[in-house]
Amino acid sequence: MTFPAKFLWGAATSAYQIEGRAPGDGLGSSVWDEFCARPGRVQGGESGAVACDHYRRFAADVQLMRDLGLQAYRFSVAWPRVLPAGRGAVNSAGLAFYDRLVDALLAARIEPWLTLFHWDYPLALYREGGWLHPDSPRWFADYTRVVVDRLSDRVRHWITLNEPQCFIGLGHQTGLHAPGDKLPLDRTLLAAHHVLLAHGLAVQTIRAHAKLPPVVGWSPTGEVPLPATEAPEDVGAAREVYWHVAPDSVWNMAWWLGPAVLGAYPEQGLRAYGAAVPRFTDAEMRTISQPLDFLGLNIYHGYACRRSGAGAVEIVPPTPGHAQTHNHWRVAPAALRWGPVFAHERCGLPVVITENGMAAHDSVSLDGAVHDPQRIDFLARYLGQLRQAVADGVPVLGYFAWSLLDNFEWAEGYRFRFGLVHVDFATQRRLPKDSARWYRECIRSNGASLPLPDPAPAGSADLVRS
Image (cartoon, rainbow, N blue to C red):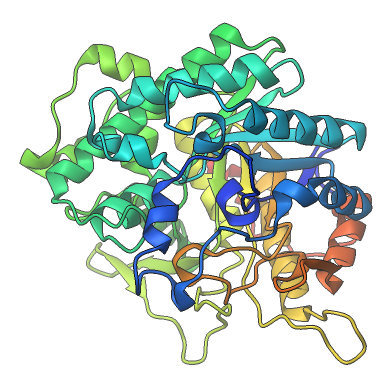
């Protein structure tokens, strides 16, 4: 049992987490550079100043990708590497780096998937107001134009923004991530609205100026509510939670996908947020809701829901000792089935899993290898559920493992390892883990090497049409 014939297998990274900086590279500062410099904000006082030194080691890293059999590589462009001040003067050295990276990928027959924003907002623009500034969407569109003009003769696949729930929710509402703000809800939602406008303007810019026919999407994230059983009432309960907006948080799918895909903020969300909702116009909604070619989903974990006898939704508590990853995320393989099912049935777009993976207790063993059986088991279980989503009728176009390399894990520094390839951060030595070899075989067989799942429940093929 395999995936569709043209299914795309890849791995993903982000600029700040792997690139580092080198003397004379012209890289401007981002909000993450400033955040990492604040005492106590990042585990161990660490930063992405060196990270995986990918800026200087990209050629060898592309060879690693080729050895793994990757068909595609999702990477992000660092906005302040291209425009050190966020706007204005272009850093030619920064654009030249992405030129070399794209050329190396294509020479290795690896399709580049370019993400325009993965959290490294230019510090100079943040000091002018950042995502709260009414001009911030236009700043992002202007940056997009620079990248498109330079790379769209070779890059066809584009992702506008990665995980707005994180960089707005953690960065601007709770302060756990850069820039470390703790804004009230109305200001948080204003920043979110500007992010949505930036997404729409970026899509317009790509479509207007790309030299190759572009394939465009974006990548929201979220913990997936899962039906406790296959019973229709439990599936309905999980679906209801998936599209629910809580009154004090931007951690949901509906507030982001409603405008971007369906052209309107969700009515339930408008009621939940009430007076905190920013003013917006029909013209802005038209700008935000640009046609997309795919929906990227970053999915790691989930939790079970059921319908109570009284008709309410209940969250099912995990069993004692339930499986967790190193960073305490619940192992929930069915998230890679139900997340695509719920997203596709509402949005109608093909789905690409743009991130999925786990942090594990990885280290080099006495035999000189990195044995990570937990990651192999994790990937096998999750990919089996993704295959079930395909059987359920979801057009799933591809899968990107997170991550290619162990890297800087934001506020957690370097203590959590997500990579298929082990990185010794003192020496920068790369060592493919057992999971890298396992993934190579999975790619070679187009998923045929995965263990067969339990028989699908009766009627499961009709779930996306329910």
